[in-house]
Amino acid sequence: MKEKLTDKQVLEKIEKYMRLTKMPDTYYYDISIGEITALVHMDDVFAAIARAYDFGRARGYRMHTARSKA
Image 1 (cartoon, rainbow, N blue to C red):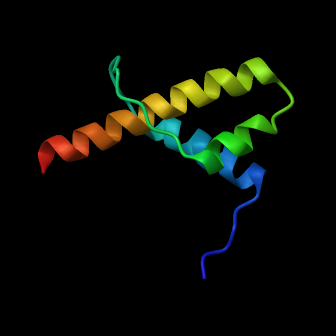
Image 2: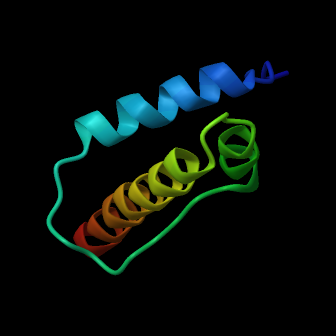
């Protein structure tokens, strides 16, 4: 069974994902409930909102790019 990640581990994973995704401006967006939950537990609400937006865009961009190649 897959081990459940802590909020801190999810946030680290989000940061790494955004660092590795180089993208232009995009309208595609994707984020899961688990990732939103981890972001909600951050101390700085505004930083959490900004991070959720940037991560969702990066993930949506990668998903769209992968689907376009298929």
